[in-house]
Length: 288
Image (tube, rainbow, N blue to C red; front, side):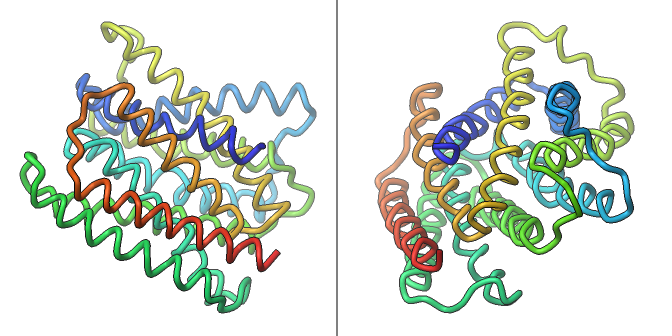
C-alpha cells in the first residue's frame, strides 16, 4: 500500500516537470524550490514526530550521497531535458531502475543471480532499444541523444537504492533520513541557482506554475519517506516495485495532462518494459 500510494504520487512528477519546463522556469530554480519546499515540510514533520535528523559525520555523509544520487543529479537531468522529450518517454526510462538496482545489488553482495531477474533486465533493455527507434520518429531534434542522456537518471536512482541499503547511519528513522536528504538537496542546489539564474521568485509566475512547483515539494516529502521505509523493510531490489507503479501512473498522468502523440514504437516499448518490471519484481519477491 505504501509502495503503491507513494509511486502513484511520484508518477505525477514527469508531467509537473514538463509543465514547468514549458512555462520557462529555469531547471536550476525548479530543482532548488522543490527541495526547499519539501525540506521545510519535512523539518516540520520531523519536529512534530520527534524525528529530527542527527548530525554526526556518518549521518552527514549519508545525507550528502543520497541527496546527490537520489535527488540533485537525477532531477537536474530530468528538469534540463523536460521540454526536449515527451513526458511519457522520460517516464519509461525509469523502468530500468529495478534492473540496474539488481545488477548493483549482485556486485555489492546484497543479492544473488536469479532467472526471473535476468529475464526482466533483458526485456527492459529490449524496451529501451524500441524507445531509441521511437526517438528516430520524434519531431524534436536530437531525440536519441536526449534519450541516451536520460539513461543516467535510472543509473543514479539505482546507485542510491543500493547505497541506502548498504550505509545505515545509527538510530536514523526514515523521516530523519528523508529530511536530511531533501534539506541537503536544497543546500546543494541553492548556490547553483544563484550562480546561473539569481534568486528566482517562483510565486510571481502566472497561471498554475507556482502551484505545480509547490506540488513537487509535497511529492519529495512523501516519496523519500516511502523510499527509506520500503528499503528498510524489504531491501533495495524489492523497492523496484515502486518503479512498476511510477511508470504506469506516470504514463496515465501524461496522457491526462498533455495531448502527447505517442507512436506505436512507444507502446511496444511500454509493453516490453511492463513485462520487464513484472519479471524483475517476481525475482525480488523470490529473494524475499
